[in-house]
Amino acid sequence: MKTVIINEKDNVGVCLDGNDKIPAGHKFALRAIAEGEYVVKYGEIIGKATQTIAEGEWVHTHNVKSHLDENVAYRYEFNANVPPKTKLTFQGFKREKGRAGIRNEIYIIPTVGCVNNVCIRLANEAQKLVQGSIEGIFALTHQFGCSQLGADNDNIKKLLCAIALNPNASFVLFVGLGCENNGLDGIKEYLAPYGRNNIAYFNCQDVEDEHAHGMEILKGFAEKAKNFQRETVDFSELCIGLKCGGSDGYSGLTANPLVGKISDKTVGAGGSAILTEVPEMFGAEQLLMNKCKNVQVFEKYKKMIEDFKAYYTDQGFPVYENPSPGNKKGGITTLEEKSLGCIEKAGTSEIVDVLAYGELLNPEGNGGGVYALNAPGNDLIAATALAASGAQIVLFTTGRGTPFSTFVPTMKISTNDRLAAHKNGWIDFNAYGMDEEGLFALLCKAVSGEYKCKSEDVREIAFYKTGVTL
Image 1 (spheres, rainbow, N blue to C red):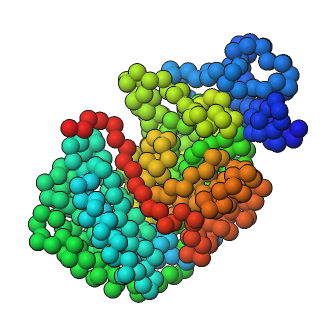
Image 2 (image 1 turned 60 degrees about the vertical axis):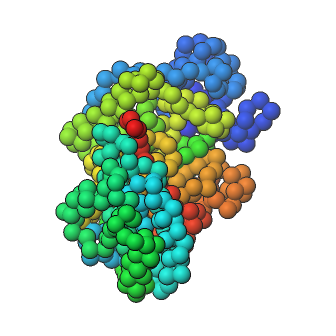
Image 3 (image 1 turned 90 degrees about the horizontal axis):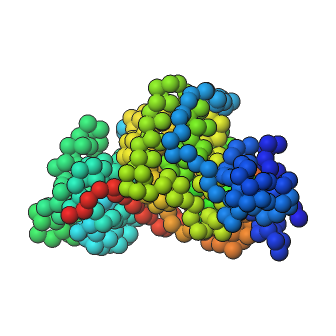
């Protein structure tokens, strides 16, 4: 049996190849573990044994339960590294304001789900306008924009405006209906301080032929965008989003630590990385808190964690309502275990700030470092939030596989050989060999337009809804 022991404190190892008793990616006891004793992996507690576990025995949900304390008291003990400083560049599209884009694209954004079909029809017709350096014209549809109350009503506006400000968008067309809560007046007011001149708006109820009107705007956009050219851009203008989905027992061993190294490289070159999935920090949040660069950032991070826990408990759910069935099948037993593997994506660099949902990462300039973002773990909601906050590309690690992509390039990084071979049409890079230089080279090619992620023909967004719909 091929195995690995992650930390000298561990009392479980990981079976890499699998056998008739222990599936690949699952844990086994390194010694006898008594009932009620802590189970330790990554040098941290991942649960408690519910029965005596013999040496060599399979360790999973049948004999381990979560040990999460919903009322844990947090402390601050700084423990982060400053990665070596390097000077790197990529070929990107410089913008009049804000950071450079890694794609030259045009977005069509509905203010409300009622006009989704109008936007889709416009996008389909506009494909004939894709020429020169234009790399795509996309309708970013969603089902919201009306009948939302309170924070939801404000958040959908903030999210759509943040999407419009992503550096990958050379031009943006907002299409409204004319009677929705999330009206164009509010969107224009929100965007006014940014002073962007690459955004147009119209309400379908205000024009005689919404298709003809929209196409005229898109034609004008395309005439300008087709002539944009890539230029040499400093890495300080790059922001990568960090996301994992469909995790398995290899996630914390291969793909997530490998992406953590890429995150450190990006930060070392002056760039930024954003980490989210707050519920998948539970059980490992103290380790991230200790990476906060000062007490002020620690307090913001702590509040984000406590507020998200209250969001669960106020609705009668435990904070450990995780991992998913697919996670368990892949070898993850408890939320603590999942979280300890999940946070590996952030590398060893300090956390320089905490972003609210829909909040932009310094859109008018550079803001190097790792940022924590308030958003849930759901794949499409979290990936959308990362890109809305300013990530030009999302590095998405997975042990189960998925074909989705948010509205920016979403690079799929597999945790194991089997998935990479089985879903070659989904997976961009196989992390099982821990090829740091190979993954970083692929990232550099992707951001310079020399490589297109395998899911780039798919562009989707999703909204984090928390309140009442009328």
